[in-house]
Length: 165
Image (cartoon, rainbow, N blue to C red):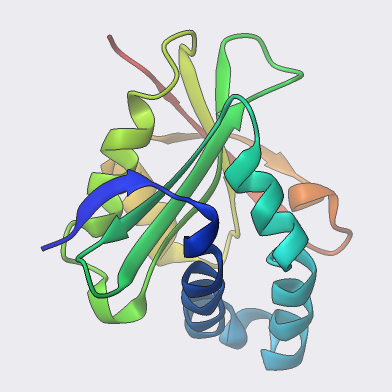
C-alpha cells in the first residue's frame, strides 16, 4: 500500500531511478533507447530534480510504501497561463502500474493548487496508454504542440481538465 507524500531531497535518487526505468519502458519503442537515455540525462539531472523539490509554488509528490518509491508527480502553477496548473510529470514504476498509484498521485496534486481552474499537460501522441489514463481522469485534448518542453522533434498533445472545487 502506497501513501502519497511531499518529496524531499532524500527522494531524489530513488525518483531518478524510477524515472529511468519508467522512461525506458515507455519511450524506448518510440524514440530508441539511446535518445531516451539522453533525455533522462537532460531532464532528470540531479540539479533539475533538486530544483523541482525546492521550487516555490510547485508540488513534488511521491508514492511511498515505506520501502520504495512506486510513483511520482510534479506540477506547478503556470507563469504564462492564468489560473492554470501545469502537470509536468506523473510516472509510476512499471511494476506498480494499473494499481491506482497514478490516480492517487493525481488526486492529491489536483488539490494542491487552490487558485487553479485548469490542469494542463503535454503528452507524447504515441503514448496511447498515458492518453487513455488522462482521458479517464477527465482530461481532453485542446491543442497540438510542435515542441514538448521546448524540445525540437518532440511534438505533443496538450490536454486540459477543468478543476472543480
